[in-house]
Amino acid sequence: MVKNRNGAFMEVIRLKGLVAIDNKPQQVIVQGVHELYDLEDTQVIWAGERLNRMVFIGRHLDKDILKQLFDSALKS
Image (cartoon, rainbow, N blue to C red; front, side, top):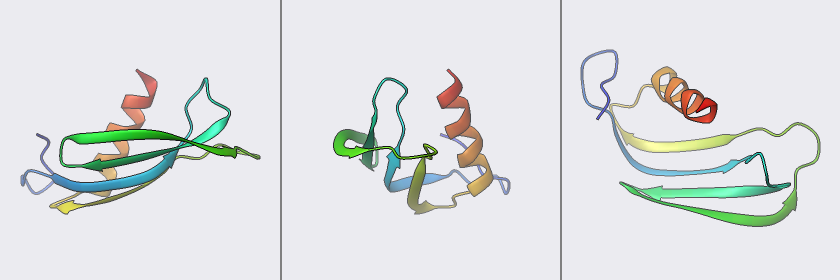
């Protein structure tokens, strides 16, 4: 578990988004509930810049820390 800047544990209850995966030309939907996550290919091909968009629902969430974690996961 990860703590926010106030020392409270962040809890992601739900997430949803569109992500770009290097070896796939199409947009990929990511959905999650607690620890269960699913990726689903769409039939929509990326046009222009490939941007990752995510929505998180939870408790004690810190946008900057979530962004850091997401960015570091993309680099590994």
